Image (cartoon, rainbow, N blue to C red; front, top):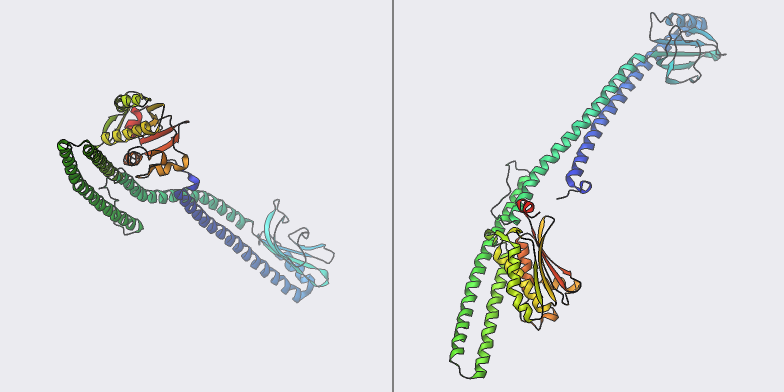
Length: 458
């Protein structure tokens, strides 16, 4: 069976689980990253505010000169390696601090993270700074270096990205494992259904005792299969009883008519009795065929499957029906390779093919061709004629039980030949198809091959 992954429910389940886990892990990592960077910025800003408040206290106590002295003290990087402080006058000239110039991207009343060079250091560092306007146009910039903290945060982010990759792999494995568990549970139900369809009516879906929805499904399916098995047993009893109940009086009726035919001298009466005998034979044949169809559609008879040589069967059909075809001005030819063997119900399959040949003799014309060949994983048996054929829109009607088209009304029969062939095909897990032979009708009966038969039929 070909799996279309885009439409597969299990595939969509795997993708859903994978992305949900991935999104969950990604959301956690992004949240941690933002919280970490936010905490670093908040702590640095608190230090910058504390430094600003200290400088403003100096301004209030002694004016700009006092602030310049305070800024000079806090500019010593040997004592305060992470403090950032700068005082400029109204013209933007450097008065004091460990920055050479006022950053052009920082406004007079701004709070931001920026990368700058401190005096005495040869590498730029990231810092959180606060700008404060002062009287007379002077400006104060205080801040805190956060380069080290951001590097630690960056290393942590790299580790988180690595963790995200690992999480993606684990999410894929978890999704695959979950899908495999679900498929395993469902596969048991599918295998059981296939086994039952193949005739093993005793098969049941195993239950694991977990009391979950899968066990409930198994219980429901098993209850349904038990009911089907009970109905099949009732059908077997009913059909066997019907066959016995109807066959016996019909047989006795025929025997009585046969005895009457031997003792009646009047020719007209003998003709009527003979016609009654023919009708009795037709009734018995119809009853037998109808019962065969019912039993085949109920799946009864698989226990009688044996290895059947299809080529030999078709050769026998051509030999048996050859004289009848000649009497009707037709020919019949078998075309099948030797050794084409399939496990089948030999009697029913032979009856189905015989019905197809009989229909071709009644309603066909020209040459009747019987052929068999391997077609993929199936064995195809085809009976084709050169008659009028059946219109495409009426082929479903022809396959119905007792379905007879207008052209068939003048021939003897009950409209059960194609129905029996279709039932036999379904009994073998196959199909019966009607096609245009251009001209005529081609009836194709396909039977699936088992793995061993597939190798032999190559």
